[in-house]
Length: 586
Image (cartoon, rainbow, N blue to C red; front, side, top):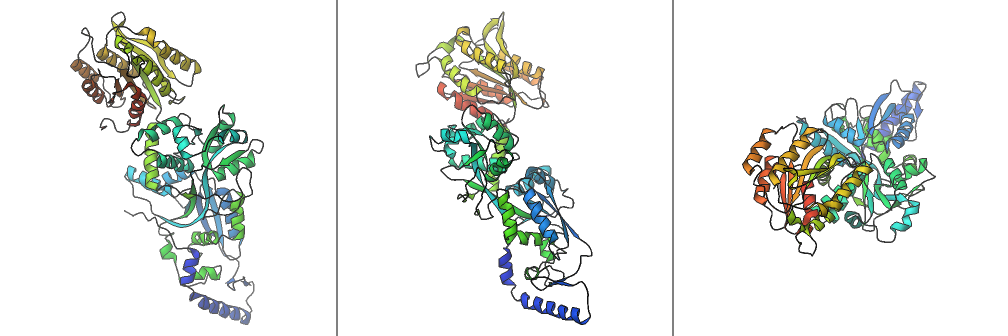
């Protein structure tokens, strides 16, 4: 089993300085070859600027490099110039490949003939290793060479919305609090979005993890598939909205959509940058350590001799050296595509971004980003949820803020509903006792997509009507069993199918089933392939939390207590954030 190497290489110039003594040897060898060529009348030998002798290439050395789509066009141009240079004898293919897809490819061990990889963040290397580990496969070996380009993470919006957003400071803290409407292209495939989430976490409360989790739930309501899709949504937004993206994405979009340009804004509390590493793929043919040679013969220049790299044996490293020198041609190509240099500097003359570079820090540690991505994946799982609301007589009792308990619930429900995306499906029941004959529950709205405005309007109407529906005692156990049975009827394996029940009391139905019968009945209809966790939230001083916990855990769910009714919104965040840990939530 191979072990993963993930280290920085010395720069081109550092290696040159340590091997200065090779230069005279190389020059003497070249001079001898020149003399020999004159003496024997060799035809077709050419001398380049450094004095090395080459002849027409007998064959071309293929180089295949996977590159993130954002940088692939620039690298294609640079590689073509490299191939055309005298003596290189290379045929380079740049394959545009989304970094997330490439990470999965390398994790599966089927990279094929690829020689190198240029993702938009080194975090993808750790992601690839994590995927391989989860699959029980050998961890891929990578070696980071030079970083070839960079681009800062920015907040983009339309020109018409800039003035509206300038009224208050645009900061990561403001985005965390929801002060500014924010769109986040899918972090599963966007390194910029993932880096932005790490920034949000860095300014969130360490004492209250709900703050960051709640922000992710809110941002997960709409998840654009790409930066381009997010830009189009911003242009059509009714309120000022920003997209977490990069300078490069803004510049690229404005090239193709000059009539509706985006403007890059920079958080006043600082930002981070994505850096593009040249990743050498370790293997028998690609291992850079074994490819080093003291001989300069066969190289394309004295620089090749000084780096001890024979181009025919390790052409990807030679191309990397070309990029590392930041030659005028390569730098100009990268800048024309909206990239800053590897150190974060360089000037741009493109619409929507400033000419001078803005200071940016490195992104958060890859392990931190991967942990955030796991949380995001849990929080944004699409839901098929039946919400069951207690409308027993006790809901008319006052809370400690002067409002009735049902009033507090209505406020929390409106906030909670706003956190769900249009892809979620939601239904509403009310329950107390004997609501429909001897049945303790009442179906007020079917489980249906929130993308349907008419359905959302119906749910809002149900919530508004709750005070008029209150009467009777609490038929808790019968209702839970009926709710789980209903959700199982049209189970959707692509979603989290669950029951969320909110009550301020305990079971008061003497004519219904008891606790043990409920537990036995839930066990009887349990199907590991179609789990329906029950999330129970009790608020107020009269809830039977012990019984609620037993019920919830029997279904792989969890029970929560909002001692103060005003905490209902916070407790709902807890219920949504712990979906990944069940049935062993702490």
